[in-house]
Image 1 (cartoon, one colour):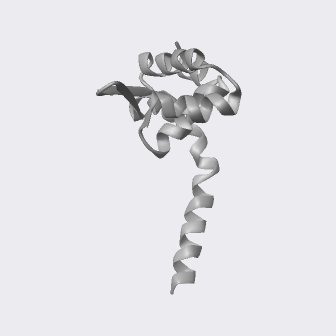
Image 2 (cartoon, rainbow, N blue to C red):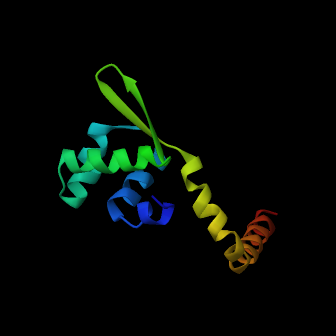
Length: 105
């Protein structure tokens, strides 16, 4: 599955946002994202499976729990696709960083 097809789903994007903050048990993902979108544990499990099988998330077993974490390699295709467009915002970030440094002095 193509990276953009995977990320086109708002539930999967939200799961990745949560995993970007910290590792989460599947139950915590269900409690947060499942309740937010009004979907079942089974549906969340399917989304986690898609993310895991396509290199966006990884899982480790901790006793009876499955702990999910973000797999940054999954975002490499997106990063490569964005590369030619960075020229539009990088100068603005550079100017902002310079202004912040100037204000610190």
